[in-house]
Amino acid sequence: MNKKTAVIALLATGVLGASGFALYKLGLRNGMTSSPMAASAEATAAPMGTPVDPSTWGIPEGEAATRRHIEAGIKGGDVDPVTGRSVLYYHDPMVPGKKFEAPGKSPFMDMMLVPAYAGAQGADSGTVSVSSRIQQNLGLRTGEVVSGQLAPEVSAVGTVAWNERGQYVVQARATGFIEKLHVRAALDHVGKGQPLLDLYVPDWVAVQEDYLTARRLHEGLQGRGMASLADGARQRMRQAGMSEAQIALVERTGQVQARMTLVAPAGGVLTELMAREGGTAMMGMPLMRINDLSTVWVQAEVPESQAVRVAVGAQVVAQTPALPGEVFRGQVQALLPEVNPATRTRKARMALANPKGMLVPGMFVQMQLTGSQARPTLLVPSEALVRTGRRTLVMVVEEAAFRPVEVQVGREQNGQAEVLSGLSQGQKIVLSGQFLIDSEANLKGVEARLSSANELGPTSATQQTYRTTARVEAVAGETLTLTHPEVPALKWPGMTMDFKLAPNLASLKPSAGSEIDLEFRMQEGDAPEIVKWRARQGQAMGGTR
Image (tube, rainbow, N blue to C red; front, side, top):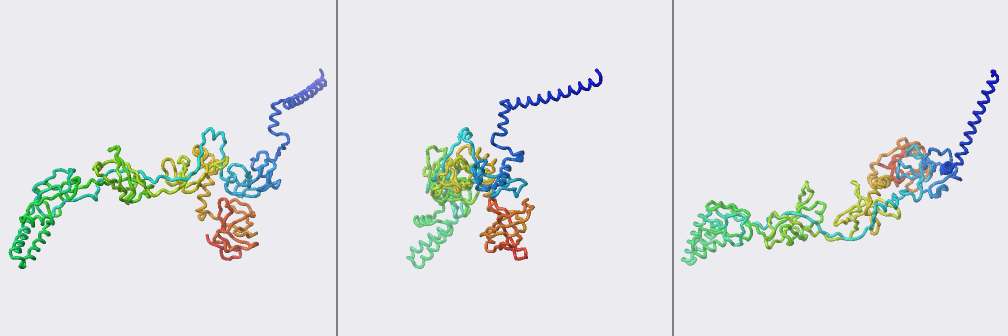
């Protein structure tokens, strides 16, 4: 084979190879097109009749819809022809609560606004949806807010103590010697009028003899100036510490009574015995103490949150494990001004009737206190409450969605909680499974918006303010339409938008077409609020922050 023949053969081989590769590619393409799997994939990727816009590849669905709405001139309130749903407004997902009527670029972030459609969960009502299958798997239970009354009772525990108002102290009215004790030990029971001790008082002997002598002279002289002498001697017996009964005994017997027997002024228990037989009793010295047991005190520990419902004079019913079946009744005697810092309880003093003397100091008792008069109130089961640590929520059922509502809770008793605000009678609420709904609400930002509405509103005066210049386009009531330049602090481009005047600026408004300097602050779910403004020519400020 010469050189020319070799070259021709090589060229022929190359042409055949190229033709074979082309035929292979053509067959492969035809095979994939005729394959059912390939046809299904192609149909899924690009359905018939739905053109795919290459300019939207790699763009999030919400932004792609916004661009489509800009091109079609769709605004809030219009119907999206592609989805068939009504557009409520446009918003920035990173800044909840800010709503815009027309599509465009977000003034807060470097991104497009996205549309919110009617019927989308949490779109405009702060609700969250949970599929019916998940609700069934969780055994979701619901109930209603009802009107009722909580039993006005407060439970408390306490210990029995001596009634200090039923305490009697036996004292020596004069200096003397204790000759005999009729009681020997503390905690002995004594009856009223029972002898306690015999006391010999030397000082009483002299004053009694003076009195008897004066009385005999008065009787012998038949009243010739001796009456005043007898009266003076009787007065000296009183000054020596003798009681009227002891003086009467001397007058009746006509004899000196040097030894006197002290008796119990009341029945009860001898709680203290300080006297000793053969000892000396000084004037005013306590000799023994007697406590009446017909009424006892109970020092109760009432939770400070319930103490406000305990009123002096309220009825008390008490029982003790030491005396099964026995019921003791009494009333609240005093609410003491003292709170135990460890247990956060306040002391209340109860007086219980103890006619049989069965209650003794140190016993443990359980009591039910009748509080203030019951009043109608709204009640929900305690299990319906979701306590987040900062607030208490209840999940309210609204058609096929759930909405977290902040409530103020009062008393709780027997599985029922009193609702002071936030709910109305007849509302349907979630009783079980609400923690799943609460978690879903947090994921959707519903609870966060609820927090903002509750917390930012009352403290809006302390929010950060921003300054800019603007041209007044229109004035409508408290609303100003302003055209302002870029606001770097908020990443706002120059635009025309509405602002609201603060209430203290309502009487002083700029005119349309004027140039002003202004200071404003953001408001959750509303237009920015102007807190200061002045004309650019140097007029006085329109208000103060």
